[in-house]
Image (cartoon, rainbow, N blue to C red; front, side, top):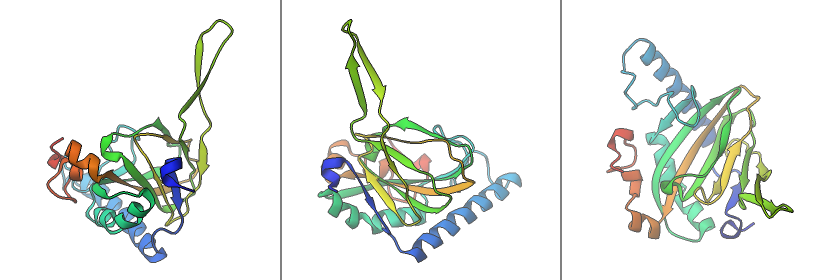
Length: 218
């Protein structure tokens, strides 16, 4: 399957089992530490250095923007995604979520800092993700009125260590209601070198990778 033609591609066992297990355990421990520090008022509710639980797309899930370990991975596997995309990439940011039972990710496209994105499964229960390269289909009724309707999309199941790369600004992606207990995923976001130079969104507007959201200048 060609990424440039289909706008998405699954890379099975993109990272090793040992690295997958390490990142999964690391993020789950970070979530635990965050909750303890917040409970004991060691950190302010406005402090995002350790992640948080406020997310516009997914309420009450633990999320972490710009985690240093994840952003190291962002740079480490960039060459793999460059080969598939057929172009040089610039790292923008990472965003991880630990999903819990009953969560649902609505159909959406991403902002420009997510031109070429990937979601990496780190552990937990299986949870399909859907992509739709063609977005909407429609038809004209007998009265000449156009009706659009959502397509079913392509169902993809990722195992720990598997990665789905996709053109986040071009194709819709979503998840139905999660019936498992926990699913640990991290999103890796890039721009093409050409787009990054034009829009000046390198590192998502931060001076360096690894910095939390308050350092964004866009």
